[in-house]
Image 1 (cartoon, rainbow, N blue to C red):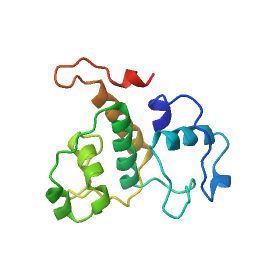
Image 2: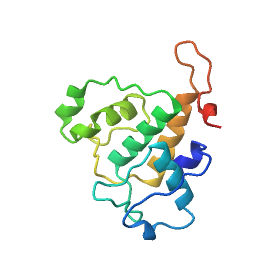
Image 3: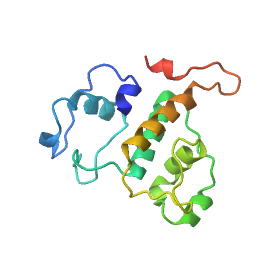
Image 4: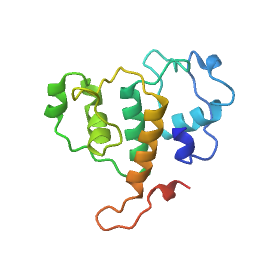
Length: 151
């Protein structure tokens, strides 16, 4: 869904995940494009895990990388604020900072991000649409929409 919204085009080539045989044929072209664009890398063990649910941390990472691809990515929320909350891993602080500061994703419950919790379909759609809208806004007096640069 994210890859289609970003309008990634072309041939992504191939990707090598040890569980690539579990990736549906219908999804392989989009995944190859996302790998080529640097949006996804798979897991450190060489897997892709296509049957697993996406975590909120993975969604924040994906949306932040997509925002970089479009051309705008600013994470200004102080790292100390996120570190004090204790539930965001160090490697993900800048991603969570960006998506929460820009209201692409929201905090849950008692001001926790819950990075390991699964993203619901509703959250995934809302956060993707919010990211697209974020990039349609003029920045520093420049005219948008910026998302059209991907077309």
